[in-house]
Image (cartoon, rainbow, N blue to C red; front, side, top):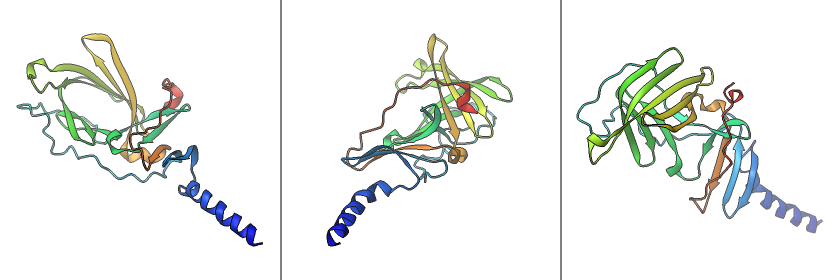
Length: 217
């Protein structure tokens, strides 16, 4: 009986780390302080580390044009994993990103502070889509700053999903897009968590999957 009790204690100590996160699906087990697991929708506890854009005047251009449009949220990136949209929670804060708009710039929020792209014009706007002409700022020579088109397309209003599409007017092949979600709707999506206790630079890698219409339903 004593031997069975000792075995029970040993197994309990081994299993405890696996149960540290409840209601999760482990993709990779604990190994040298590293684990990757999936949290179901609504389980992620997010502590915002991004700076508000309310008082941003960055980069320091002489004067911004002011625009009026209805994009008032903080937008978080979504990734495609096993045919579904998920939010990726990295093990190191330097990989966290978010985007906001103010009345004069498209602002990237990340660990090192906000970086803004001034809005030069609104090229097109309707109920589901708005296209901006934005400035990729050149700090050394403002005259060498490049313009890009940023199209924001609403893919699912109920779930707060948008598609950000970047295009270069100088290169037709220079185009890329990625889905984002309104910060207030993040609880509707599962979270792929990369938890690193030791090697903070170690991040989960998965094969890139194409966007399909089913993703946004």
